[in-house]
Amino acid sequence: MISHIKSATACVVLAALVTLLAATLSVAQDKNDKTKVKGDPDATTRVRIEVTGGEKSIPVEMASVYVRYVIKHTIGKDQKVEMNIKTNSDGVAVAPYVPRRSVIVQIVAEGWKPYGQTYDIDNDEQVIKIHLERPPKWY
Image (cartoon, rainbow, N blue to C red; front, side, top):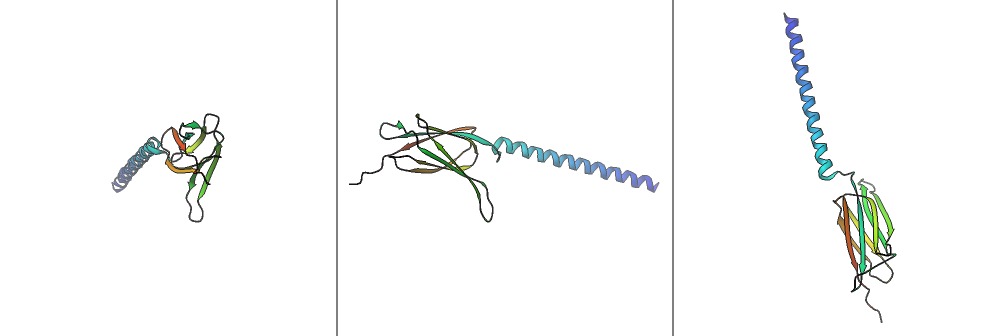
C-alpha cells in the first residue's frame, strides 16, 4: 500500500514538473516573439541618405558619408563599425545592413560645411534627408 502511495506521489510530482516546464517554455517563446516584432537587436535595415546643399537644394555628389555605430559594449573597449559610402550623382548614398539602434551619420564634401548628427534607426527602410550649407567666406 505504501509503495502505491509513493509511486502515485511521484507521478503527481512528475506531472507538475512537466506542466511547469511547459508553461515556462511558453512564456519564454512569447517573450521571444514580442522582441522579434517590437525591436529585434539583431534586425538590420537599409538606410537611404539623401544629401542636398545650398539655397537651391542641389544634390551633392561624391560626398563621403560615414555611418558609425557600436555593435557590442564591453568594459575595456567597445566594438565599433564604420561604413564609408560615397553619394551618387543624385546625392544619394545607401547603407545596407545597418542595425536598428542609434547611429552617427557624418557627411564630408568638398566645398560644404561638415555635418554630423545621431539618428535612431527603427524602421525596415529609413530615409535620412540632410541639407548642407556653404562655409563662410574668409577674406
